[in-house]
Amino acid sequence: MKKNYIDLLRGKKMTLIMSLPVNDPALARVAWENGADVVKVHINVEHRASKTLFKSFAEEQDKLNEILQSAQGPCGIVLGADTASALRDFPLAAEAGFDFWSLYARHVPAELLQNTSVIKMIALDSNYTAEEVRALEKIGADVLEASVIKPETYGQPLTAKEILTYAAICSGTSLPVVVPTQRYIKPNEVGVLSRCKVAGIMIGAVVTGKTADTIAKALGAFRNEIDKMPETA
Image 1: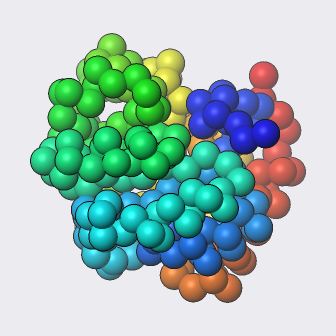
Image 2: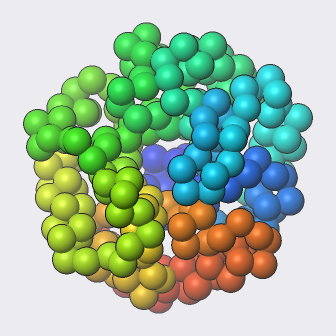
């Protein structure tokens, strides 16, 4: 039975999320086969790390439906990089069966905050404040995505500075916190994130590359490290 996204994040093991570099059903299958708990896709955005231009839901629909049909766990979707695209394509994504949507807070139409049919993962960026961390749950978010690394530092090594940032965010909210690999996070570094109470690690092009082989290798390494970690209370 497929677990609910929130149930996974609230579970005793860190959740491993694969952010696909392209909406390719074959890569989604590779993700499931190599230990991903969750798969995330994109529409209406040019992705900074993967350099991929994702088109509208209608244009990506055949591939998205195939990804959903073969899913072995929750699937999420980034609805875009503007409010108009998010409003236009949210009903289509919900009808298709996506378990959650993801958007930066500045791209979330207020209207979507009132919809409870699909789990809401809202991302804070590098300009976030501690007040926003505390308030996110109050406006209806279900998951906090800590996409708080300055874009010009993407791909750089993980340091104590970023770990302190993630720890402070986790301490400031009761929402499950997901950390994407904006920095080059290594598999053997997930333990320190778990101790900070990070609920999920979302790996993408910065650490996985864009081919089936590199994605399989990265996922396997992260899966192995997570499985070795002790369960949390």
